[in-house]
Length: 426
Ligand code: AMP
Image (cartoon, rainbow, N blue to C red; front, side, top):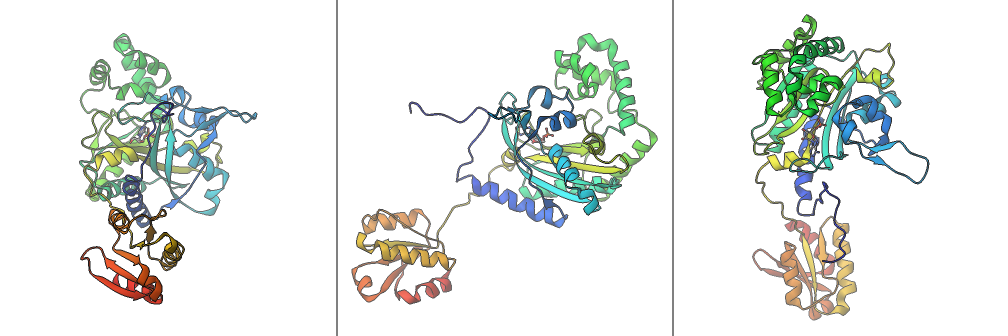
């Protein structure tokens, strides 16, 4: 096809045959979110670019390399498409004074996110996230951390995701993070020359990120400085909090692995961080990730007198759909399909179709008519339960011939009896 403009790199169409799978995923998610008391929040898909710069950290990969800025013809510059949900939710939480209205805001969002990354399998420029945030004054509790993880695992179970595996870690408090930064730099400095070019920069910008670098040489350096499975040197208070989270998970029978290398890419995380992987996704196998980010509320202008607690996660829905494996196809169907012998009967057929729809019976017809055979074929293709046939005789007698498409049985029904007749049988 010449001159066809194709869709931008790293984006995808969700075609009508796929939308039922998305709908089913969303319905399952909404059902479980309601059980846990989460309510939906919708924010714009673009925000002031400074919101992302201030929250995610100027040095994070998302801000450094992946923000998609908007160019507008007005002087409304400094806008960017949202690369993730948390920053906007916190902005909205503060702007709408939700902390004054409720003790704990349990929020979820669902929608497209945008990152200008190099497109590859599992990495898109427009992808969809379902995210959850629990924010409130004095709300930090290991039980809430565990609840959030239970919610994530319950949803993955309902989605039928294969082999979900929960990895958790603690980055400690804000003070711990500053101390561990020095500790890591001190230990890494002799190995600096061995690190990959990205990690050379991370050493300065965000040394935590060296821990989860995928490059083999960096991984062996990390093993050397951390040892196998050694935890980060956190304060006793942070260790105690993390131990409580782990005990809660064990009490809930949620299996997990502690990974001291798990640090997450964004600057705002403190204390509990986690990632959930699934089987069959290749190298991009994280279906969701999140953590505690209480400090972000003050960073974005929240009242410093309030001791905010906040934790959340986001699932990548494209990856979840891939990790579901083979799904039963969802075949669209109609209750009734109008078939008319003569194009002159179209107004009557059309009126009857609308009458059926008005009574909650899904219905269709062929707008350009065609032979009875081709119309019945169309009825078949649309998986109609009944064909409602309007021939010469029926027209005269103000009746229709209702054909059951499953067993081919037929019955004459008066126009005024059609709706109750169908309702009884659907
Ligand atoms: P993050 O906001 O980076 O913590 O990502 C949360 C989840 O979103 C990841 O675990 C992925 O499942 C998904 N995700 C992140 N970036 C992309 C992307 N570029 N393409 C597709 N899914 C993504």
